[in-house]
Image (cartoon, rainbow over all chains, first blue to last red; front, top):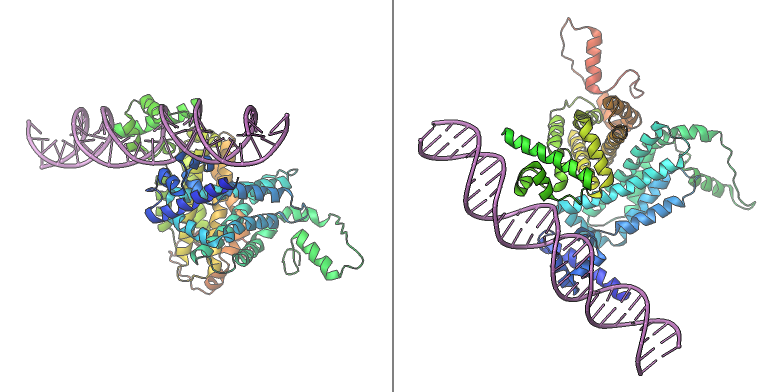
Length: 238
Length: 238
DNA sequence: TAAGATAAGGCACTGAGTGACATGACGCCA
DNA sequence: TGGCGTCATGTCACTCAGTGCCTTATCTTA
C-alpha cells in the first residue's frame, strides 16, 4: 500500500519535473515511468491520462466538495454555501503552494493542460448549480435556474481570479483572505438578486433558535448570521 | 475551392452521423474519411482533431467575436457589449438548429466532446475579460479585474443556460429573445456593480452628441440610450 | 500551353491508451 | 512451514489519433 502511494507520488513529481524541463508534449509516458522507476503500464494504473499526472486530483476534491454540499445546513444561504465549497478547492492548492506554482507554470504554457483544468473547474460549477437547484427543487421557476447558473459561475470566476493572482505572485500571501474578500464583493452584488425571491418567502418563515440560557446574546446573533448568511451591514436585511 | 468546402461538409456530416449511430469513441477517423469519400489524411487537413469535426467552428466564431469587440463603440456599456458578443455565438447555433441539436445530443453523451465545448466557451470568456480590462486599461484597480471576470462569467453562464434550454427543446422558439431576457436579468443585478466606479467617473464626463437639426428628439434619445447602455426604466439612472 | 500554386492522396512513424495474461510480494490460515 | 488468495506491478501486443514527408492531381494565371 505504501509502495503504491510512493509510485504515485514519484510519477507525479517525475511528470511535473520532466514537463517543466523539456515541455509537456515532448515528455513521453515512457520517460516519466522510467524516471519514476516503474513500468509504463503502471503509469496508466495510477493516472487515466498524461494530464492527470500533472494536475491536482480534482476527482478527489470534487468528492469532498459534493460531500460538503450534501451535508450543508439547509438554513444557510445557498450562495454562501457554494462560496465555502469553493474554499475547499482553494485549500487543495494552498496545501502545497510550491507544487501549485509549478503546475500553474505548466498550465500557462500547455493548452492541453489548460483545457483539462478548465474542464475540472466546470465540474465544480455543475456541482454548485446542482446544489442550488436542489435547494429549490420544489420551485422550478426558470428565473431561479438562471440565477443559480450565474451565481455558480460568479463564485467559480471569483475563485479562479483569486487563485490565479495568488499563483502569479508565486504563492505568497493569504489566499483564503483574498477569496473571502472577493466572495464578499460578489455576494454584495449578487446576494439580493440570487436569493431575492426566496428571501421574500423566507421573510415570513418561522425560525426556531435552539440555545441555552447562558449563551450571550452576541453569540446567538453570530450563529443566526452564519446560518442565514446575512450581516448587519448587508443592505438586503439592513 | 468548392471541392474543399464539399469535402469539409461531407466530413462533418459523416462524423456526426456515424457518431450518433455507433458512438463517438467507436467511430474511427478512417471510417469517417471513407464515408466522406476522401483519404484519411485529408480529414486531418480540415480538422485538427476528431472532436473538431463534430463541433461547430468556434475558431471562426471567436474571430468574429474579437473583431466585434475591437470595433465596439467605446461609449457603450462594456457589459452590454459583451452581451451582444454572446449573441454572435448564439447566432452560430441558431443558424442551423437541426445540426445544433444533433451536436448537443453528442456532447451530452461524450465527455471528450463536452470538455472540448467547455474549453471553447472559456475562450469566449477570456475574450470578454480581455475586452473589459482593455476598456479600463488605465485603471488597474484589482476590484475592476474581479468584476470583469465575474461579469464575463455571468454573461457566458446566461448564454449557456439559454442555449442549453433551447437545445433541449429541440431548437424550437426564439433563442435570441430568450437570451435578451436573460441578459436583461443579469444586467439588472450586475450592471450597477460592474460599471459602478466607472459610472461615478462618467457622471461628470462631458458628452458630445453630434446630430442634425431635423433629427427627432426621440431618435436622439434612442441613440444616447444605445450608446451609454441605459434606459429610462434602468434603476441605475432612473 | 507552360508554370506555379494549392488541395488531396499515400505512407510510414510516434506515442497515448487498453486488454490479456504472467509474476511477485504480502498476509492469512491450517 | 507450506499452501492460498489478493493486489500491485510487469510484459507484450494491439488500436487508433495525430504528424511529417513526399507525390500526385487539379485549378489558376500569365
